[in-house]
Image (tube, rainbow, N blue to C red):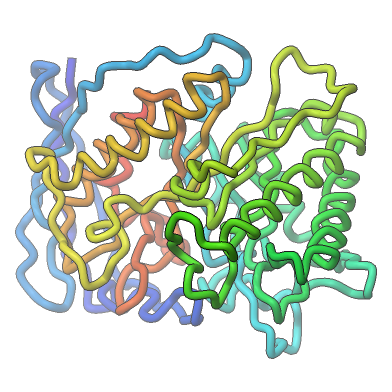
Length: 443
């Protein structure tokens, strides 16, 4: 049976319209709202074919006002055949997740006075244990903790600052201890000035050293952690600054070279982690293709790394990592459409298309896929469209045996990528309806 939920929203003050204005890769601060959203719930039974309805006053002012009335659809997706083994059971148990964006991945290459300030330079607030618990309590079983390391390196041997390592470890522990799946990665270390990795032949030696040394240290630190800690080799590896940084035509020589370099760096990552012993011998690992896009993973030259000859697992524990803000015009393009309709195949077909291709190349052949980033930016309170998108996206992913993680960057207004769901300074979900849509459709 379905639950029909009636929620009354308190008026949201002018401060809400100012939350995290300008927050994003270029930084930004936070302004705490003076009034929080309150709710009352009444549960009744209704047929499973009806949508969950959230009743609220229509937005009446440019200063915030009420959120619009929203219905939360429950999608009925035909399931596809998914291999029955421990790797796909693991992905299924990850259910739905969130990426802790604009936090440990933030960087400032002109240097701050204190390296620890990078945690707040983009999102405006330090992560707390309660934030992690709130995500989990809302139903997010997985959390991705993106981390940039290059601005926390202390010597030419790529030694990570102990203070930074300890702080990241603290947040990892909060999530692990609360029972969540945790993905830890190398994030914004992919530009030439970072002296991290850059996937072309000219930088291959430097890239290999960086990937090896970072993962040697992380592998040693976490080798006794259980399987709920997942390692992701690199975030969106690509030719930063190149004309084909974010898309690529078939046959471009530079991209073809980069794909080969990414293959080699992914294999180096797997070999390094596996050789460290402990639980890393069979830990689940995520490896992206070019720019972590679906097209990058589907590139004919992309190769899923091989497990080493002495691997002891029953099946491979290597997963393909994909990011997909699809359809782009709705999900991420600030100049694109603000409309997404379950009755318009113009948007849903793009989701169907890329997921079907990932299923055909990987899932159907026994290789798990995790969509580590997705979401849809706020466009003048187009809440119903975002709710419909969230419901459709996760239901479709689950039907193909994949799990997905929403990119929550704690940004809610302004001209940037407003993908926040949970207001960290206030300690509550502003977009509860999107969260409900995710949870209702992730099983």
